[in-house]
Image (cartoon, rainbow, N blue to C red; front, side, top):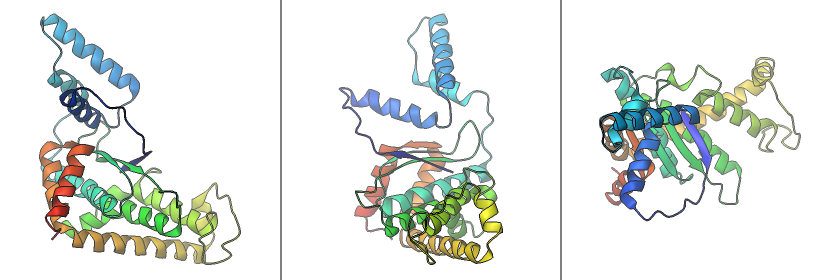
Length: 257
């Protein structure tokens, strides 16, 4: 699963070490609400006060994890593969900043927080790049494991749901359709539209197949980057954007494969 955000300019901090700690904690807390964070910090302060010491990183991390059992080895490995696939393709296509990856979220599953910048040109090519990124988790599973899980679909905010909605918009409302591209349609119920129009469904599916194939191609060309990120994410369980970007840039200097 991926989360997107607009690129923001963050204020400079006088203490890089403190900022690095805050970045790690923010990545660990992906998926939590503001109320959750407030409760965790309050409980960590109470714990530190009772023990007559300063609050520690471990206090906050322990609160974030709560009493969740450790994610099983094989599932954790698949989560790492899936989220790393998104990040590698996002980086390769220069879609924007990477804010963090987490495979130990409170809600279960993996989480990618990725920013998007259209660079002033929201073209067909840019939307196709986004489709490839959305399909990249499934592509990574296909390449590394040899078979895919249901992790790409199943919910309204899943990779497949978001990719289908984007492909439908490209065909029906963004002016990139193969048939009557100048017509704008406001499809409030994509499922009904697709189920009632087999020809349209075929065109949408063809876009998704093309995006998946492109993601597979990019990941195969970037296999060393993918493998390195999978291992790092599996070991750490959460990587902030700085750590992910540094790893991918280091792999870039190494020449990819």
